[in-house]
Image (cartoon, rainbow, N blue to C red; front, side, top):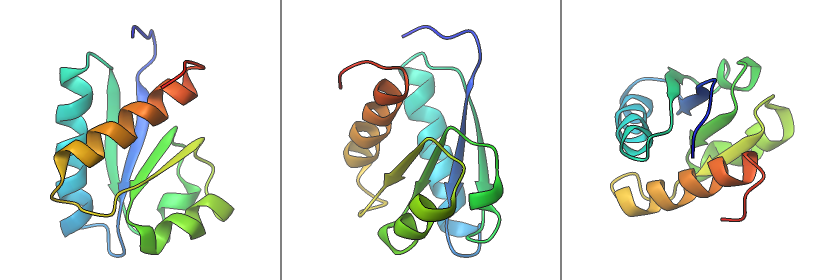
Length: 103
């Protein structure tokens, strides 16, 4: 998948620190290996919905709130932060949907 503009991804958790930082590093690695240019930032639960992002990656506790309030085009809900395969599958599917491809 080739893009001219990098996608903007926000890794979000309640406080925007531990879990968000872990997700950020995982998301950056997954997108880099897939050849998808991206800018990945972290945010807390109050800042993330207001950010100009293509995708927000978060846990199930915040996902529904983000679906209702966030400006992002896609919300990726991760149930197991330690499961890299889950994050990769859901993140790449979201990128494909955003690009108008079939996952």
